[in-house]
Every structure is written in C-alpha cells, then in structure tokens.
Length: 329
Ligand code: UFG
Image (cartoon, rainbow, N blue to C red):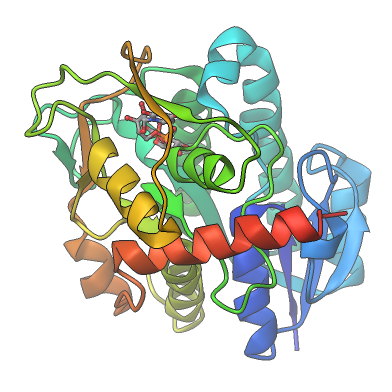
C-alpha cells in the first residue's frame, strides 16, 4: 500500500488531520521542521524532522516510502508577521511549496491536498465568499497561499497530478478526545486569546473595533471546528482516490458570529466574566467573512458534525486547561 506524506502535522490543523487518518488505518509519514509544531502532537506515523524546502530530503522521503498522496500543511500563518516580513512567507509558503511540488511530480505522486485560506478573498464585497468570488488578497500571507494554489492548478493541468485546495475560514476548537489542540505560544486568534484569558495566562483581551457596519458593531467570522475541517481532508482524499477531478473548495459552515457573540459564549462556557476592553480596529480586518459552503457538500459529500459554537468553545477551553497542566513538548 502506498503511504501518505503529511507536512506540518506537528502543528494545529495538520495534527488533527493526521490523527483522523491514523485512526482509520492510513499509513503516514510526517515531515515537520518543528519550528512551530510539537513532537507530542504527532500521534500517528513516522516523524521525519526537516523542511519542505530541502530538496534532497523531500525527494528521499517520497522515494523511500512509496508516497502517492501528499497533504501539505507546513506554512507560516500569522498575517501581521507576513506584512512585516513578506519574504519569510514567500519562502516558506510559496517557494517551499514549489519545491515540494517539483519533487512530487518527479516522484509520480498522484494526489495533493493543500491548505489554503479565506485570506485569498481579501475583503469580499458582500461579506460572504463563494469559490467564484474574485480573489484579492490584502496581505502577503494571502498572496503566498494564492500563488501556491495557482502553481497547483498549472501543475495539475500539465501532469497527471490531481489536487484539492481547501480554503479554510476561521478554524477553532480542539480534539474532543483532549489529546491535541492549538498550542502556539503567541497566538493571536480570538478564541485562543479568550481561552488564555479564562485560564489566567493573560489578564484580558481587547475587541478590535466596535464601529463596523454589522449588527453589534464587531467583526463577523465563520468559525469551523477543527474536527470538521479535518474530516473534509479525508473526504478530499477519498474523492481523489476515486478519480475525482481537481477542485478548490471553501471550508466553513456558512454562518457567522460576531466578536461579541463569541466572547459571550466563552463567558457562558467558562462560567465567568472576562476582562474585555473595547479597542480600535485592527488593520486589514474584513468586517464580515463568511463561507458560501455548498460546493464542498456537493462535490465531496462532506457534512459538518461539530457545527455548534458552544461545542467549539468547550473543546478549545478544555484544551487550554490541559495545556496549563501539561505544556506541549
Ligand atoms: N479579535 C479581537 N480581539 C483579539 C483577537 C481577534 O477582537 O484579541 C477579532 C479580530 O479583529 C477579528 C476576529 O476577532 O475581527 C477574528 O480574528 P482572528 O485573529 O481570530 O482571525 P482572522 O479572522 O483575522 O483570521 C482568519 C484566519 C487567518 C486568515 C484570515 C483571513 O485565522 O489565517 O482569517 O481574513 F488569514
């Protein structure tokens, strides 16, 4: 049986996908440079410590393991950092993807599943973005991912490789079994920051902007549970294995919550009030970003099973408490 290579599987999303793949008996090889990921997040597969930009290493891993499918998560993901240091993002997210793709073509890899992002849409005019909404990134992070999408499309047109690019909206929550979760030390994401405030890792948090043209003045996002997002990757794999065509698909629920709604839910689940300040807008935040998410249901037969904000918050908070007792290594 050919094996699957999962890059970045020591990180937040990659570790959840690798766990689901391992649970269903897939044979995995993990490639991660452990720059932001953790060895203990790798629950299945053989871990190779190294970089997707290392041509010799990638070629050897593909050949030695008879890899026919690659799931590519390894990337930098902090938007403001991408603005301050764009070349870091173009190297890791774009050049290294190019290297990986070249190695895959040479090794005859058949399928690639790629982590893309809603950041490719920039600030969509209607708030909701379908896969046909024009792409218009507003930061280097979004561009670095969009360029990789384009390479994948071009390579899929020119070679037998087929791919699925999944455009993630706001990924949140953690493994309901409590084994893995978002562990990044300097996280900036709303729910993670709020959970850190609950467990006392930070005194409180700020709402970035209360004067948006939304019902309560704060930004609206489409939060998707990481378990459902991970399941979408397994569906994408089944689709490609069954001979399905290459596709680019949104991953979200098609329903938005405001920053205030999210914080109210955190307070409800935690049973305490948070120290919340109302601050100025954060540069580059679209007022509303919601997925039009019909296509993934139609094309992959994906159905969400965790689309409940309280459940998302509960699993994230359970994980934050676990992290406090037992830091990741
Ligand atoms: N927010 C706060 N206070 C905080 C943190 C966030 O008010 O302490 C607000 C933000 O301003 C935003 C909302 O909460 O309105 C969500 O912010 P996140 O940082 O959690 O997530 P983003 O929507 O900025 O980021 C997501 C993905 C990125 C992707 C981006 C595209 O996580 O990978 O969408 O817009 F690039």
